[in-house]
Length: 425
Image (spheres, rainbow, N blue to C red):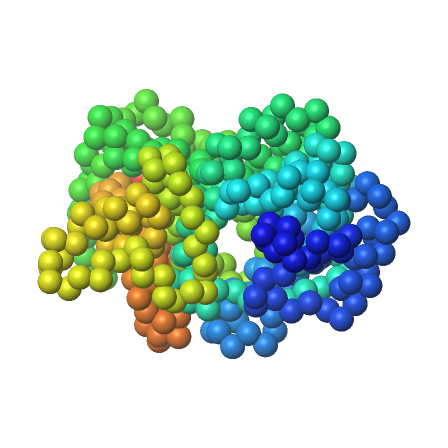
């Protein structure tokens, strides 16, 4: 983009950025140019977006509604109460602002970098809710995972290279700074959440666990199974206040979807189930992305829709599986691409390890999350249209809801059925 603006599009006062799969409305320029013409302090205009209604992908048809709700709830309020972000596409930018900044920053998240530099220069962005552009959802789980890895490492790079500038910026209010930092810190903090899960579900039960038997009555017959619960000193976590925190933490990220789809309960259940199998299972993948960035210090712009990204995979077929491990490790450090064996292997081992712990501690909800950890790398190779995939994706969310319901009994003195000490976070 910097090259094109430097050598070709040199005279125009404004320029628009659009993705390859984006559909702009016919009045896009009419409305966006009018804003920049009448407000000289506006550095860029960000248009609204919705999921492409003609997207043929089954995955897009299942989860594309999330795009609509996200743009509806998260972006308009920023005009008055937060920081309007340039989101990399569907926007019109002022050329002289681009020149004053010195071009787009040389980082993967160049859109956010541009926005904070423009704000520090005294310009602001404007989100126009009545300009509706259409965008496609990733057409496969593989593409979805590639996009997420790009976001994870790109955000980590942004924080490393630009957070200091952001915190020192004098023209950006602390309200705006927090509005930027909360969503951008969310991805890198996944690594800390993963470490928390290791501590809560493996370390604490190992050091402070007490073995007990739980009795199941099926058809008049009793069956006993051993389980591990935390020592009596941890009983404080079985109170109503801790359970309330659990409920709030569980529902907060999906509250906008619940409100938007409340009148369509079946559609809401289907959407939450399918999105849980994808979004809630990203913790191991995100953790790898954050770790790989801080080890290698590099972020790459992985193209979501490019099915020929083979530079991270060895072309040799003679070394065997073990012989390809060093090359997979190199690919992990270089790009931590979801195609590599080491990434998928880590996700599967995480799901198995935590799943065993969930069974031993009778954490029904956490078992659902572990199942999602296992399903995500498997769906990397299977089509979303696969009839088994379409059925199994509901199981993690059902287990999570079941555990949440059972955990309510902990408030009444039944801690063995607690929602899961490691999941409430």
